[in-house]
Length: 297
Image (cartoon, rainbow, N blue to C red; front, side, top):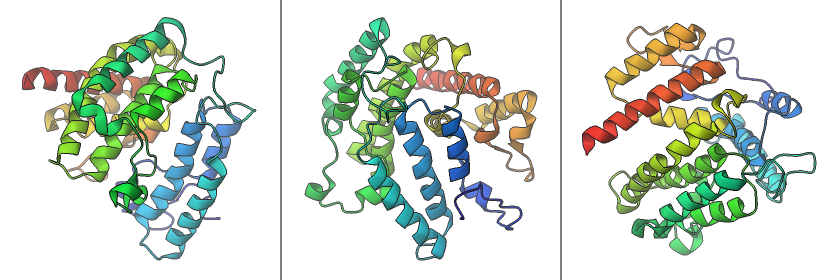
């Protein structure tokens, strides 16, 4: 089966594959991660499944055999996962109120941040799911693979579906990411999402630094898809000078993650970064973005 193992782009002579597909994923890798207990939530598992089909449909042309197979399997997996709660992953299939859910002061702080975000005047369009049928935008579910809104986030937080601050922050960020993916740069909805993202990032930053995604930073043992996607998204906002600094960190700490086959365009394979280097790069990128915000004020 074409999706059972990672794409061997060298053997298949597909030199463009690693340039187009920044986060490779296959069903074999997902199965190994699942058996090893490396998914903390159903949403993380579902994101990796969706990533397999996304990659196949991104690289292969519409109408090709592999593209059509990915489309059919997406429908099948979406149907299978539609009735599964997106909360903490367990043998019982994931449900709310698990013992690993956010609690105490951490839960209270997260609720407070979410309330602040929702109170913003420009937050109204993001409070409920996008009704793409009523809005007459039939291509929305094709472009946005994982819809998310602040109302759904609030319900899931109240239901105990988040086991870490990082999981919650990732879903909130998905709200802005979806809006900025579907709407053109410069539109009012894009600009609103951009402003709310900056506000939310600033509010979640101290919580993330103290929680480390569910405990002290040293307790983070697994890099999720959301963490990698967020780092990739943030890195795209860096200046050329800051990007050179990022490359320097990787070159010093995890050289195997660098692709220097093209001297004029050194690339970093985020999936190859070890945990320690990833966290070091993540802190560096956050510091760079914080400096950029200060300069822009």
